[in-house]
Image (spheres, rainbow, N blue to C red):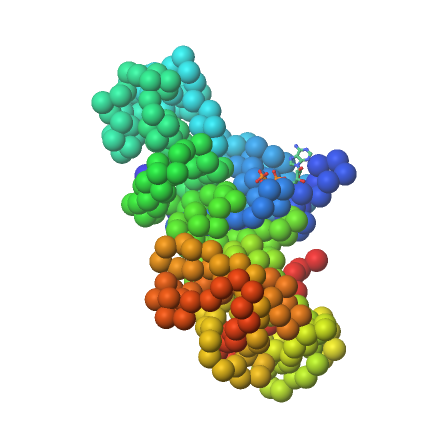
Length: 361
Ligand SMILES: Nc1ncnc2c1ncn2[C@@H]1O[C@H](COP(=O)(O)OP(=O)(O)OP(=O)(O)O)[C@@H](O)[C@H]1O
């Protein structure tokens, strides 16, 4: 097996005709990291992955794998391997031949390449299916063949383009756990493209959130969840209320953000007097029914109540905020049930209100 290698993306831009898909991004992925590139459709995550793989040229900038500049190397010469969303298996070849394919292309002797393919099929617990064709396998098994085929070249980094998207919801969760186990046991660097926040949170050591060809935040899942860097990240991850206003006072690390036609709220972080600013309040840290401290709550009108089993989602409006979400435990909600149309105080602790940074442009 190969050693893991770090990936260094240095000021990489990708232009297709009139479209700049990736705007001078820089990112260091340490060796042995499970990295997820996360973002909405069209944000540039697949282009970034394909540039690392060598399936797409880099317009400007450099990509390093370990100490080697791989920017202009052919895909097979890079030390990376790619697993495609559709698995791209050959329907007319059996599993051994599918898995051994890249070794055949490299001119590896038949006995040796079949032995190596069997070893990879064993790693994926598919040895019993060695002489089947892809169509005779389930979706999860096909995915494991695709993984075996990518790993047979002993890559230093495995690149996965939406590897779970073809699977049904149950299989998706099972294969997710298998991917994580595989990465941990191989110890190589994984870069996995996904548009699912949940998938990225479950798998990644490093989540890279992209928007419009730029990186909004690159951090571990807990930091992304607790300290979203920008309003885009807070909204995209979906666990925060984003309140927009203007900075009207600053005292030390705390600023007052005044919502147009609404209330004043206090939040911690970097602020510039007089400028527009966004702040975030975690939806699951909001409390209801307690008297509010000015700056850390408001009286809102309940616009929707959604039962979710262990939690209840309340939507409220008030103090110049249109859509404010409170996720309450069922215990907290049923201790004081509320109905649509009711006006109730909502509040949060001072350390749950953070000022969000501006997106890089
Ligand atoms: N071959 C191409 N030619 C022209 N434009 C392209 C090409 N590939 C991608 N783009 C454009 O580049 C931008 C980024 O695309 P990319 O596929 O990298 O995004 P993505 O985040 O992976 O999206 P998705 O989740 O939908 O796959 C988009 O605006 C897309 O339309």
